[in-house]
Length: 391
Ligand SMILES: [Zn+2]
Image (tube, rainbow, N blue to C red; front, side, top):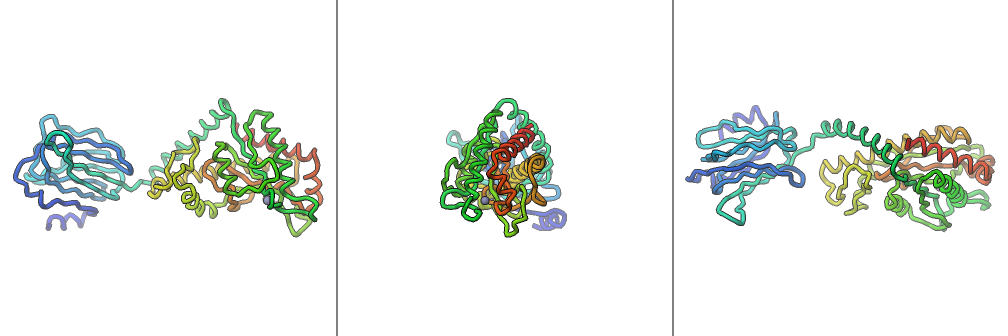
């Protein structure tokens, strides 16, 4: 123990799994093989021996290592170290003393958890020592790797889908049924305006080859959650929620587009995770299918964040394109691209925006809403923006 105390000054001893009873075994153990395999959340080191080995396993930091000490052990003639795998970047013998053979695994991240046990396989008298290692993900390395990968994927994604596959656009006419949205002197309500515009946009998009779905095509009330579910089910490549705004100032007018704010996003990553439960939130275009019920570890949380980030970035990109296009045909609100925590925007599956076509409380905007020419030309600008987005 004095020796251990001494080295703990230099290195940081994390975990010790010690089997003192077995350490005093009389017989020599012969180790024939060492294997590494992937398991959920980490790696398993498997040591094949002819009888139960007396062993000790612990991890060290700076640099990160896993140490396996085996008492009174011989290694068979054909014994060799396997190839490295995952976060194990090197395997070697470490000197200790005559009675103990030390195997050192050099790791590129620190150890979170070690579990070890000796098993007796169903056939033969052989024993295996299984050491399960769960590691802490090196988020920085992962980040750098993924940034590169992500850029490539986005490029490939755009190429692939613009050439081979019909892109799916889900248009979400806001409100409906018992929820009229904003209204003007009970003459006209938002739910009618947005359904009208959405239907025109749908036709135009279909004409140029998109697959288009409306979350509602009649005066129905649909819950926000169901709209999001619908888009996911349809495999949306883009989600556009269409609304019309109202203001107490009748002079306020113009088009605006909303994307999700960071604030709403973080909270929602949590909520979506709960809501989705065992369902995978990621569409086929997502980075990785993750069972959210188990999405408790850092790695999964990282992928969820990444997916949200990616959806947010492409939403922002599209919102800017859309604003520029619509500006050619319609008045814009000051700061036309805004950020908010709308429920319908909170999905990591696809980019999503919420547009406010204008203000029902402004005479010019309201007239536009009822003007076939305005509707058609603004819808055309939407189509141009969508084309440009997927170019
Ligand atoms: Zn609305």
